[in-house]
Image (cartoon, rainbow, N blue to C red; front, side):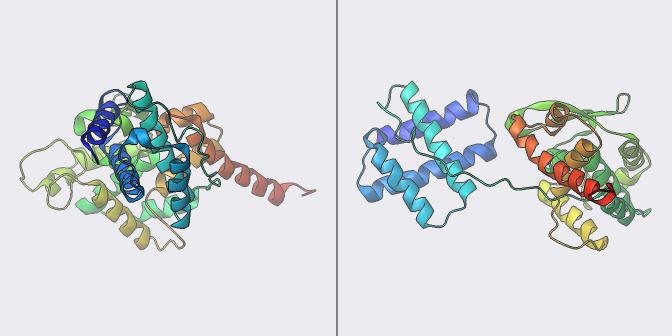
Length: 301
């Protein structure tokens, strides 16, 4: 691409970082989507972003469909390029947004998988051991289920983020947004045991002190991939079957709260969702739960 295009992309990325406060993870996707569109432009002989017309945008989307791209991925790319051109319009670098009228594919509602309460109890029992690793794993599992935080958020928790007086934790979420999330008595006890009864210190093994809450077997900070690996091992040891992944604990947190009467706005705030629509997907789970309960217990069902 020419100098104008390179500067446009750089300015847009800077805008996402500073004004929109997007995470590096999200910005990476934006970069890749724009790079893919730039390759398409080169193939079509289009020299500048300002030369792109609506028909070119439609052709790009058609190519996405021809590649059998998932609807969610295609929708994300269209949304990215629409935002990019909206920024270029604001900066008066283009005269129109060729993606403004491009229709995004409607994604079907994907109902999240979750663990039933009985299955969660099986997971907790799989961590009931006196070894430092088992004590850590129980504290990890209890905190994830008690708060519904993401695995990536859990990896960034430091000791100073815990407030045992109020049973709350400071969570640094997507887009560098911070929120306080409460945790219950089971997580409280498991964390106290892990931190204050020697398990964490034993795992540290005299390593240089750091303040991350969860540590690996070598004493270093536990990464998000490390947490996922541990959870998968716990799930395997519990002999649970079916399509299972660690993020289901977050889904279980939200589903169980709603099943037991929590309001949608509260669950949204606890999960750190920017939009209520992200939380509403869990109502499909609760409606199915209500339907099954009704069918099993109503005498006229």
